Image 1 (cartoon, rainbow, N blue to C red):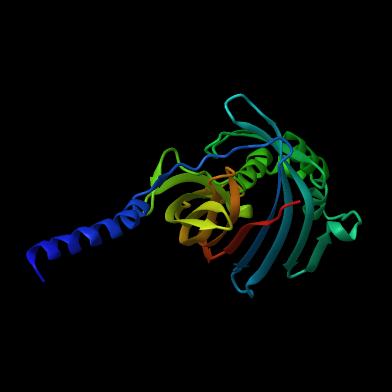
Image 2: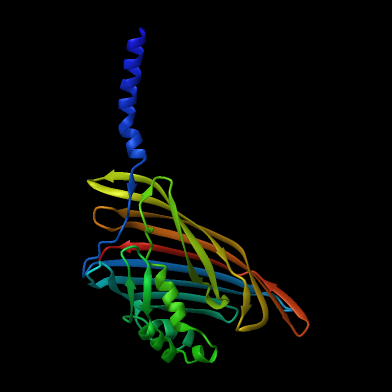
Length: 305
């Protein structure tokens, strides 16, 4: 092969690879394009297992399985493209097991549970919270007073125990809306944001979610940004309901996927799971006890209405 033909071949190869390199370096900037009346249904499943030791007695085991279905609906969109949404509790199913037996409630089966711990969730059916969200998915304000008020009325002990009901409800609602970064992203880029994730009676874990842009794809005429979701957490401090108790995070695993439709400015797929384990040390009246509650939280889009 002559020197000129070699140069020509290299040039041809360079031209052939140029579109591939260009695609690899492509940058996209996901942003929500909210539409009034747009709806999305999420399913939230949470399972908690706790074994409470008592000196001279067998461990007391408790399990809690809570399943919620929540509707997100865009109520209005302002001139900047930011939106006000409603988050409405559509259905609740709860199974709670303790040494005294099992308590269950399923809103789709009807009925009104007498036990306050179940009644407070039953009272949220049809109640809504409002939230303001930017085009980048940042939740700037939540009004959960309607849901919180219904829960307090059904379970007056919430106030007596000093439970921040609005804060807990607001934290759960924030989990439904993923952020999409603050600027252009190329394959391999990532962004992070931190939010509090409740752990039932054991406080909340501060979790930093990391979204890594895996790929930019074309599917059925749609251009999609595909993100892998991971995260890390912190959970330390004292529990107001357990004086003398100290809480540490033993494990926090976050895994999931977010697929964003760049053309529509909307979520295509969103699902993630948080597996946590705590170490709770209790020292009361000279008696030391330890317990390791575990939680699995699964959040996903169930379907479009």
